[in-house]
Image 1 (tube, rainbow, N blue to C red):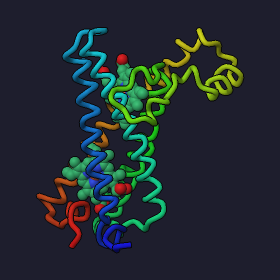
Image 2 (image 1 turned 135 degrees about the horizontal axis):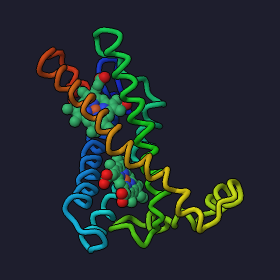
Image 3 (image 1 turned 30 degrees about the horizontal axis):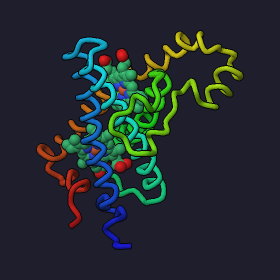
Length: 204
Ligand code: HEM
Ligand code: HEM
């Protein structure tokens, strides 16, 4: 395998770099779609529903990508931490870990509370046409109905915490992590000028 595909001790390899930037772009698009819906459309109109379809479809692409990215990360050595105080290295490490955790949980909670299936996915590839409503799945029967004894009707209220998680983590926690992460990247680039950004952009 060409060795610049993998991470080295000094920088991320091509695979991690491409996954990073493709996901950053898709995350931005996911947010634009859902806030366009919230701020600029009337409920239950075609533009509102189209914006939600785009949000959900992009969310599923992100889910697939974050799993691939996690597998790649866990089967590769990560570059050495950027030189700096221990608290900065720890906060970078934890920001990155939390991104992985929340980017996995966001699509899962979204799918669980949205209560929508394949009829609602926009322009998605064949695999996604098979996505059923959560309440039509065997997992729903096994966990929610048999495990917790929650009926189909009671589920409408019981799923609220998943929505709260999705809206609070997506609207506040992740946004704070983005500010921290992008702020740190710009600080390294323009104040410290230590080439940290190049670890995610260059191969030389
Ligand atoms: C990484 C992926 C995702 C991110 C970052 C994300 C983020 C968000 C955010 C920030 C909101 C709140 C918008 C507001 O306050 O009005 C939201 C709402 C929503 N999301 Fe996601 N989401 C993701 C994936 C998904 C997926 C996969 C689904 C469904 C399959 C989904 C379904 C929804 C729905 C239905 C709402 C509207 C909630 C409401 O009506 O208040 N999301 N999402
Ligand atoms: C908004 C979505 C973003 C997410 C979810 C994200 C996530 C991550 C994650 C998880 C890592 C650790 C590497 C890995 O595990 O693959 C990382 C590294 C990095 N990101 Fe981002 N990132 C985003 C946007 C950005 C932006 C806009 C910039 C630049 C302004 C940036 C600059 C960097 C740099 C320089 C590194 C390498 C840090 C190091 O070497 O320790 N990221 N990012």
